[in-house]
Image 1 (cartoon, each protein chain N blue to C red):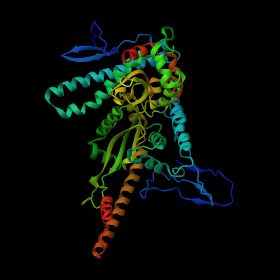
Image 2 (cartoon, one colour):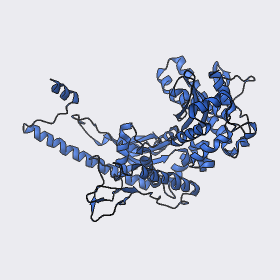
Image 3 (tube, chains in turn brown, green):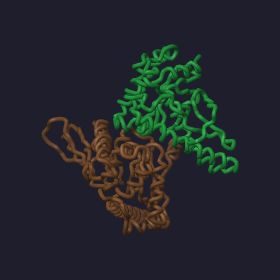
Image 4 (cartoon, rainbow over the protein chains, first blue to last red):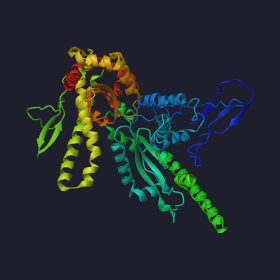
Length: 305
Length: 227
């Protein structure tokens, strides 16, 4: 998503500014830069997310996914999420943030804030269109295929699991292939022997707008199993839709390139953690106390005395 | 097609066709009390046929399967499987319950569909919501705001004797929102209920469906709970 800014007041000087970041571990899927302008002295930032078109025309996926479906699915549903999110976040703290940050913030650890549905659905649909291509289907290759074989037994094994997830997601939702780097996320606890075995491919399903970003996984492939995704073309026959998706639509190029980025990100994170560990060891070697995590209750107790 | 018993018993006022099979009661698709095209133009015949013959039938098929597996697991004392089957029973059993109510909530215009409620229910609607228009508006708003798949309900709290508007997700029956809640009118807002006709414009579906809502049935249920 590209965010463009609009200024609501007339002024003299405009300063460029960064999109607000909430987490130090911001996920960079594409270069989602928020371009916004800050009015000197008035602190009003507005940014508008735009509807990004699929990387092919509305009829390019025929006969497997009809032009009519694309026109409604992208032109109405996806567009609706964008327009509604823009209205929803205008003037709030979410305004000006990147889409991924809006998703994480509004996910709110599962206690969803109102913007989550629209924000996540925008992201999910962008990801979905780019997961397909005209003349898609076929098989993955290279490192990706190797890891599929390792984690699912075979490509057929993966397809079976993916189809099962997609067809058993009850109600509205999505099925995903994701790359998961198993890291312990507890202060003071460290995976004593991190290895490549900890990082693996998984098939997961999610309901409504939830996506694996909120679990800190790297999504690689998705299929939309909300009924609006297939009802015009397949009516109730979701299984047929899923099969056609796998056989004729999946863009393994897109999946592979996402996989490469996910691996690179995981490697970078490991290096960062390694650096941090080495710093801590240095500190304790120098006799400096290592930072301990205190319970808030400990501090309260000591204050009460 | 499952065999149907010659006598049809109704459970709690809702026509849930069932039969005995090896001691376990399983279920079959209830007939619609009208033709598929009878609710046009509010709901198309194409939708009614798919909704009834495919979606509802699938819930029943899967519900029966889950019940058989449950009986088996219970007999073996296989707690793992018993617990694992709960979601399939909720989804599919709920789907059967909800759709059985839904077909009774609808009637062709000739058979009184769309006619406002009279008697005690009509009075209760005015008391609880101000007017029928207000009720329709509120249910429309709740139904439109429901994210994903689910139902919007007009129910009666049989203890408090009050009308309530509630939504449930997926195929959760109204009783999951409160053990004293009895469904009077349920409107299916899963996309399969309207997509072929209304596409993404769920609010139009929620507005038009009132033209074929069967208030007579709702009154019967209400008067039973609030005599």
